[in-house]
Image (tube, rainbow, N blue to C red):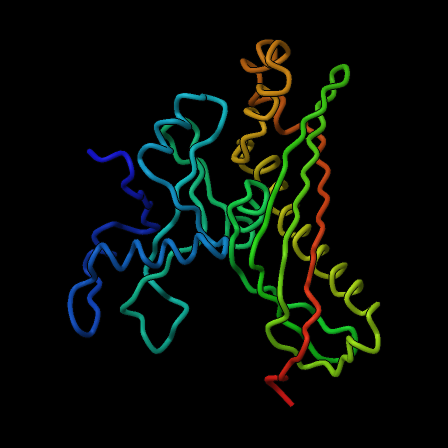
Length: 257
């Protein structure tokens, strides 16, 4: 078997997914992979191969994750379709629960996988504004002090303004960009904190690779922690810092008057 074959878990039955047909022809595996890759770019599903699963099982302390595929029940006009979003979380080879799409994007922010994605910001005045993330970077920094384990997560992202309904003159009021950056920081931080909360309190599984970060920085200390990591992970203190850099547009056509 090739080591780079993407793996998905069907929420429902695999037969239900495989029996879905498009108007033209039965659903080809290539179509599934194309949608999976797109969802991975915007952060709503991880792209996981059989090699990733094997590596996660070898670490023992990092929970394996697999994207979810399911029959589409959201689109009332086309129920004969599928969607890929969310994450199945395993403990070794057993399914223990799920992360929803927002929590999955929080996870993807932490591990630095988001390369593209739209974020809708509530407007400073009365409308709204959409940014397009064009790059992101994350760093996980563990700090061991006594019996306490603190995980500092720093996420940086770069974005452009895609469309807006607010009447904002950014050239006359450059401080508006600072406000928009702060709004985006809070939105991303909330997504990350939702993922952390679900992983620590509900699933009790380290899906972020905190274990590997501790091992790299504190190899000696990790030897003492690794056998009880499942108990230590839910007690970790996690601090999240987000820095957004939304570029000021030179010229902008509003999509909605």
